[in-house]
Length: 175
Image (cartoon, rainbow, N blue to C red; front, side, top):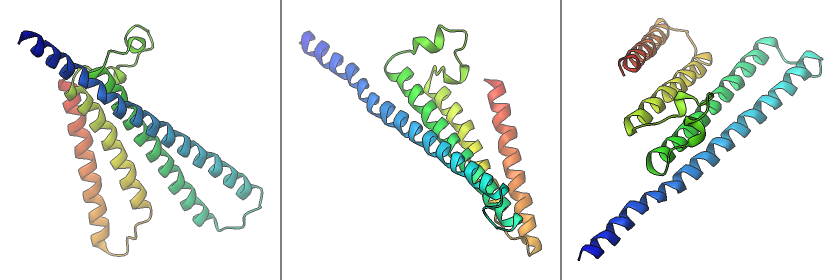
């Protein structure tokens, strides 16, 4: 009976390698987001060039609002790609193997060294918080402040973001 237990435990332990599917899918998704955001910035650069050379006759305020909105969208995509990258590297380190290149070089980044599930969760939470801040900023750009309650809601949103950053920073310092 001991040999059955060893075979079962070996199969159970090796089943952790199924995580490689999530690692590969997350890495591919991150690369796709980086490529899309880079393409958007390249198109945006061409649009700015056309505006500056007079090939596009658009009022400045509309041009500026569109420009800033697209840049914020690109930042949002880059941050989400970063979340997926950290997630894939963290899953790999936790379930499959340590990444020798990250640990054995002077350039190994501490953000990519994941030692526990809580460590992965904390690193992801910080980047996700930044995504939420960027998304909030993107929505604020297109908000109308015709009534005083709208300005009060904006102030409340900024206060909530400030508190989230404060508590997130303090939580990271205590670890």
